[in-house]
Every structure is written in structure tokens, then in C-alpha cells.
Amino acid sequence: MAGTLSVAQALAYVRKASEPEEPPPMLLSGPLVWVRDNLFSSIVSGLTTLAFIALALWLAPPAIEWATTLAVWSAPDGSLCRQHQDGACWAFIAAKLDYLRFGSYPVSERWRVEVVEALGAGLTLWLLWPKAPRRGWAAVMFFAVYPVLTFVLLRGSETLGLPTVDTLLWGGMLVSLLTAVVGIVFSLPLGITLALGRRSQMPVVRLASVMFIEFVRGVPFITILFMANTMLPLFVPEAWTPDRLLRPLIGIALFSAAYMAEEVRGGLQSLGRGQYEGALALGLNYPRMMALVILPQALVMVIPGIVNNFIGLFMDTTLISVVGATDFLEAMNNAFKDPAWSGPTIVASGYAFAGMFYFVFCYGMARYSAFMERVLAKGHRK
Amino acid sequence: MTTSSLEASNSIAIDFVGVHKWYGRFHALRNINLSVRRGERIVVCGPSGSGKSTLIRCVNRLEEYQRGLIVVDGVELTQDIRRIDEVRRDVGMVFQSFNLFPHLTVLENCALAPIWVRKMPRRDAENLAMQLLTRVKIPEQSSKYPGQLSGGQQQRVAIARALSMNPRIMLFDEPTSALDPEMVKEVLDTMTALAQDGMTMIVVTHEMGFARQIADRVVFMDNGEIVEINAPKLFFDNPQHDRTRLFLSQILR
Ligand SMILES: Nc1ncnc2c1ncn2[C@@H]1O[C@H](COP(=O)(O)OP(=O)(O)OP(=O)(O)O)[C@@H](O)[C@H]1O
Ligand SMILES: [Mg+2]
Image (cartoon, rainbow over all chains, first blue to last red; front, side, top):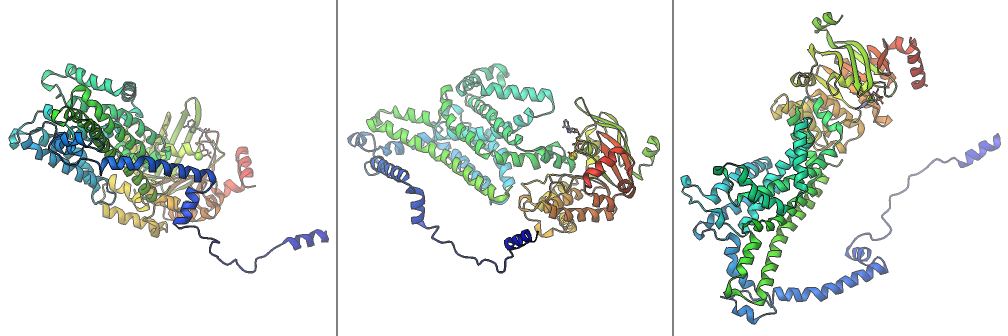
């Protein structure tokens, strides 16, 4: 008994002084450390790094030379480009830029398009910059005022003294951007409505939402476009028959809304019952609960998915040419037909430029989504 | 009893009259009869699954009941959504898992309902929220997000948020069960202060010290029914029903 006690006493321990705080033993940061840790951390990683550097050195310089030093930057017609076949023909783009931007929109009225574009860019910045003041107003302007203004300006209104411009004349980037913006502006609210409908207590609402969503998701986009083009005129009275450009716009908004609805539903499902109960117990009614508590959280959670849909939508705008709309890519194809600008480098240059146009917008959206994720993660850690 | 208590609704805060509730085929509440007087503090206890949460969630209609009658502040709970909203504005609720809104700051959590339900000007609502946060002793946390607070602090924010609608009745569903032991006291202290201000309270809890100190009556539930109701001293020192005795012997071990 006395023995065990003394063993326990021998194992007992009471700290007399606290340990001093010391700096870490070696340098943990700095560019060289980063290179070592990330690029050459092992033999395999080192070899991989070297292989990719070699690949880049082999591929990049010719491409860059083709696009810059060897390129033809200005020329009155295609003859200079035909002489310099190892470089891009940017002169072609410069010569056709107005057509690529506006299609056949009357030259005297093109300022209207530019106003719409400038307004759109400004509003987008206002809406997307997280620290901008009064972003609620920006949202109202973007989703409610801007579409109406755009319609009046682009289409024209005799009462305001703006001559009407038939949509058959619209084309190029104007149509591509318009389609994308219409798709985005209408598909998100519509998608949210469908997602809420799918979770509604009312069986009829639920069934209608499910049927719409599942039907649209089960049909290829091109089919939707053809259906919008041929069937919309059948179902609406003659006088209301949608304009030829409006039909694919309706098609793309409905198509995208179904996918948006599924994204939003994912966000709604990831919220626990507690958030609903917390809101209800405070006496918030259904619309307020959704608008103030549920949707802000659900939407933030699915920003990456929503932006993915926007990117997909932007790319899908290239398909509306199948029903006769002249989008940017179609305008490019038309521009190739000019005999003054025929030549082996023209088409490659044109498509390279088109590629860059789409890339700039889609990559921008992807970066913005990543940026927002970081901002929001910082904002309210769970 | 029933009609007279309807008329005497000034002194009766909540009246359960023969309430039954089923989840599907499962009989979760069986013939509940209970009158809670204004200013009275009721503690509800009982084994897990006995229907304690279901009972108090019927009061603000987070759950429906199928038979019987619940009258809250003289308003009979029916399917009528406007009546339900009316009752919910008058009844605050605090949950085991806090259910704060993580995308809003502490201040915004507490100002949300006054602004949108009471239509209070934002400035007034924020002043009110600050007052309430002072009352639960965390005014300095007002600009943080709930995720940045400790559990005890979050639960006190939840209490402040429930108080923001100036309710006449407060429901607590195991408010300290999700907390680390060292934070239980700060929440119980807040609730004690509230009780001393005369708030009508129904508290589901297993904190028997709190029940002894604060409760006017302790309700013991088992298997969906009320088994015993008594003043805390009699309830703990001289339980009448076998099931109560068994339960107390298990939790007071
Ligand atoms: N939504 C539901 N659907 C079906 N059964 C349910 C539902 N909610 C609760 N129940 C059942 O009703 C019974 C009572 O549940 P309740 O949550 O009221 O118990 P409790 O006394 O609060 O228990 P605890 O102490 O574990 O919180 C339980 O048997 C439970 O399984
Ligand atoms: Mg419970």
C-alpha cells in the first residue's frame, strides 16, 4: 500500500515554469521556398515541372509570334494578308468590326446600341462590386428597369422619335450579348420560382413545376429552339406572335431556367429545418421568410453552380443561329464570305478572335464566381 | 373549466384542452390538458421521445394537432394563417440548436422581425436590438456573425432575438442541451432574469436546479401524456407517480 502510493507520487508532476515561446526552426515562406515546396518537392514533381516548361517553350512562342509580330494589323483589303500567310490577319477583324458588333443595324442608329452596352456594363459593375453602395437599387435597375429601357432603345419608339429597327437587322455581338443578358435576367428569377414551386405544399404547383423542369431537361437545346420558333406562333393569337428574334430569346430563358431551378433546389435542400422554424417562430410569413432568410443563404451556397449555368448559357447563344438569328459567330461566318477578304489566314484569324471574345466573358464570370466565394467565405464563417 | 377559461383569458396565457397529435399513425400527444397562467413559469421534463418538444411546438403552430384546442392569449389556434401569425408574434421561441441566421450579423438577427413584421423604422429596430443585447449581456458582439460566437453567446442572441418581438410568452426547447457545461450557467442566468421580470415561460429542460429555483410548476411527460404536475419542491422531494420516480432516479443519479 505504501509502495503504490510512493510510485504514484514519483509519477506525479506539477509544472513550475511555463515554456518560452520560440520562433519556428526554419524559413517557412519566401519565393524560393515556394518553388521548392510546390515545383520540385520530389523527383516526379520536378520532372513534371520540367516537362511542362519544355512543352510551353515549344508551343507558346510560335502562337504568340503568329498573333503579334507576324500578324497583319492593318490593310485596306485581303491582298496584304495573302502575302503574309504565316501571321494572323487582324486587319480583317478591324475592317469588319462594325458588322461584327452590330450586324445590319442601321449605321445612323448604332449609338443606341452603344448606349445600351455602356449602361449594361455600368450596371453590371455596380451590381457585382461587393462594396458598391445601394446594390439593392442596382438589382432593381438591372432586373426591372434595364430590360425595358433596352427594349425601347434597341427596338425604337415612334413617340420618342426613335425610328423602329426591325430585329431582322440586329446581329453580331449585339445579338449574342442581348441573348446572354436576357437569358440571365429572366432565367434566374424564373428558376427560383420553379425551385420554390417544386418544394411547394400545393400539389398542383409542385406537379406543374416538376413537369416543366423535367421536360426541358430532357430535351436538347436545339430542339427547344426549333420548338420555340415553330410552336410559339401556333399557341398565341396572331397579333401577339412573338418576333423572330424574341422566340429564341424565350427559348433560351426557359431552357436555362430549368437548370437554374435545379441548382437553386440544391441550395434550398442544404438548409436545415431550423432556419425555417427560426423564421416562422418570429412571425415572418412565407414570402418574407424566403426573401430574407432562406433564399439569401441558399443562393449564396450555389453561386458556383449558377455561374456555371450562366457560362453554359453564354456559350449556347452560338446555337440561336439555327433559327435564323445572326449572333456573333454567325456574323463572323458571314464576314468570311466577302471576296475582297478571302485568303488562307482569314478564317483562322476570325475564329481565333471569336474564341477570345467568348473566352473573355466566360473566364470573367468564372473568376468573379471564385472571387465571390472568397468574399462570402470571409464574411460569415459558419 | 374550458369555457370559463376561455372567458378568463386575461389571466390564462395558454390553455391546452384535450389536445391529441399524431405523426402518421404514431400517437405523439394524448389528451393534453394544461392551463398556464399569465406570468407562470412551467418546466416540462420527461424521457427522450416523450413529446415535450411536440407539446411546446404546438403552441406556436410549428406542429399541427389533430384534436382538441389550444388557446394562446385568448386567440384560438386554427388553420387560419393570419391567426397563426398573430400568435407567433406574441410567442417567442428558443431552440436547442439556436437557429440563428448565419448570413446576418447578431444585430441584424435581432432587428429583422421588428423591421419586417412590426414595420418598425430600421433605426428604432436597431436601438431595440442593442437594448436587448445589453439585457442578455453581449452588446459588444453586435456586429459579429453568429458563427463567430461561442454556443452560450449564440443562445443568448437567440433569446434576444425572440424578445425582439416583445412577446408575452416565451417557449424554450432544451436551450442548454447543446452547450458545453461551462456555458450553461450564462444562459440559465439570462432565463432566470427573464423569469424575474414576470415573463410567462414554458421551459423544456433537464436542468433540475433551474426547475427547483424558477418553476412554479413542473410538468412530467412520458409516452405522449402528462403524468404528473406539481410544485417543484413536492415534485422532486415527493414524486407521486412510479414513472416520475423512475425518471428522477435516473437523472438525479
Ligand atoms: N416529424 C416527426 N415525424 C414523425 N415522428 C416524430 C416527428 N417528430 C417527433 N416524432 C416522434 O414523436 C415523439 C415525440 O417527439 P418529441 O421530439 O416531442 O420528443 P421529446 O420529448 O422532445 O424528446 P427529446 O428529449 O429527445 O427532445 C418521438 O417518439 C418522435 O420519434
Ligand atoms: Mg425535444
